[in-house]
Amino acid sequence: MGLIVSVLVGAVAFMGQAHSRRVVEADEFRVTDGAKILAILGNFDGFPGLTLLDRKGSSRAALLLDRAGHPQLSFSDERRKTRVSLVGGQNGSYLSFRDANEAEKLKVVQNFNGASLVVVRDGEAVASLGSDTDGDKPALWLGRKGEPLFIAALDEQGLPTVQPYEDEDHPRVVLGDNGAGPGLKINYSNGTTAVALGVSAKDRVPFFGLVDERGNVLFHAPE
Image 1: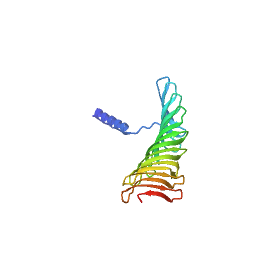
Image 2: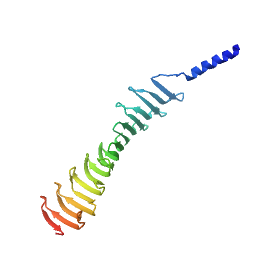
Image 3: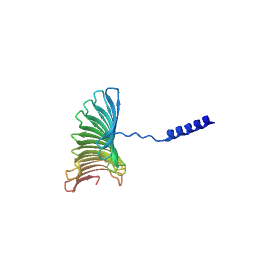
Image 4: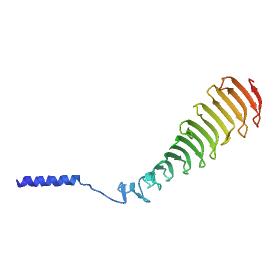
């Protein structure tokens, strides 16, 4: 009888230990091969993170929270230069690709306007393929110093348009479709149409027109 009681008491004690929580706290955990550190899980400047190191001790991959509290995954080369980084934030996320000097060359951006693939040169976007500013239509954008030089997109009716720009407000050439047929417009630098060729949206009749810089019609066919 005494043996049975002892067994029961021991079983209850073991079950209590099995269900109790064990918490280990530390500033840093390290994975080693006995000689070199291979991984570190710890506190980096006040933010948690995990970093993986190569045999030379260089960080090659890291998962961290940045100073704004956004999660960031980065991959570095043997010179510890960041080559690829993925950042998530409240207003969107982006994936960035960098050269050997850490200059950004290409990024994939996702925000409230949709997703875009952006080509970067000298810190400025020079090309973008993705959603337009409304986020609901595809668009191809080419520019210089943040200003558009060429835009190919869909208009409000979902019809394609191609617009080379002299500046942001004045496209010089517009090639598109008004629903009745294709059309071409060549504009003055002030945005006024100089030449128009296409199909009338109203009566679906082909037309050709010439206009001076003040907007006066010089020639129109048919009359």
